[in-house]
Length: 130
Image (tube, rainbow, N blue to C red; front, side, top):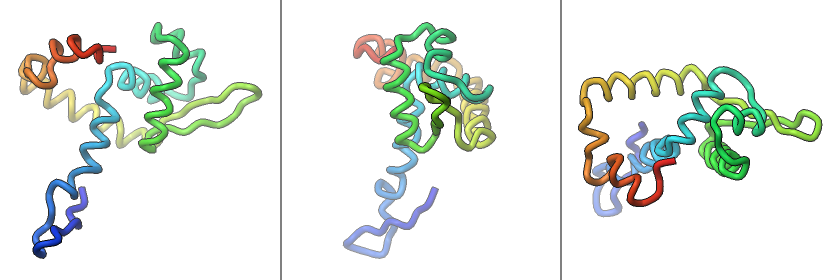
């Protein structure tokens, strides 16, 4: 993460501004459906219809999440006939990040799921649990 942003009042790095892109990246991974899509795309290219069949999600939901991931620079698409084929960008790096997350989750146990701000109860209450 680059720490180049400077506070206008001094030459001290503005940590919030410097960390904002990282926070945005993690927000891109914050939805379970998006994570499922990323995991499937790590296996290879897929069409939206393939992803809907694999994940049991509506076409509109998959398309919405693909658009989010594309805006984050994490996926790309290419036309094949009348369909688009989607692929994961930076596959090895994304898989490394997900593996690191799994290692961290193993160390923290249920603490993340029980978090009152971002845990599973909060996700269910706000309708963000997939």
